[in-house]
Image 1: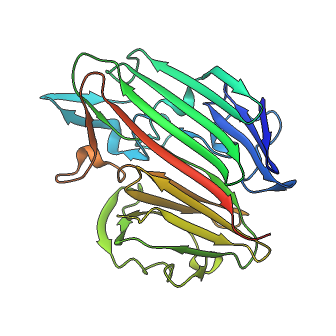
Image 2: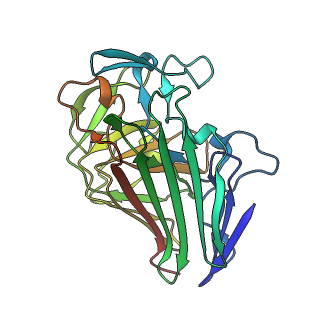
Length: 281
């Protein structure tokens, strides 16, 4: 584990485990769900990167440039391809300082037919943690692209969630979006609502404004992001965490007519920045 510290914050990184965050603490208290010792699955980590696409691709396939792209079905017996390639690859440590580290991952074409380079820059300071995620197309042709981060926030009973977005998408049995509904369908997040009262959620909020807060009672945790058009909310039943995932596109965007995603020319780059801070002690 690579350990950083600064301004009351402590960050543990797990480069070999998909470039994941192992832990994030403020003054000794977990802000993200900590990774259990000996974990071998990035889904057990505190946060991991989503590259070169976010969330799900239906059936692990899509059409691009007149050809069918087939992706690994990389999530057990689930029928879709999930979260991209980088979360299941080891990353290398490119730079470390006491309060800063940079991880890199290079992809040569196995499972995703375009070459790319990915970088995560982690920085701790008075304003908390900043993670800058960059994806660069290293192929000789244009590449469809998406990025995101998948943090697991530690929550408590009665935790209130606040966020603003244009709409939320309902899904089919395989968590593929089917239709948009009013943003308050699962809870009045604009006013602040108990996330526990909403029950199970695994849905995407479109045209998110880039800010969300979790009021745990003792303190408010603030998530903000740039380069994230949408926010995916995952709240499983019976767990003491929720995921607020800043992402650049909706699930299955490569298959949906009119969906928004990025197209990177050769050498082109896509960047997303996530900040996690504490508003009140």
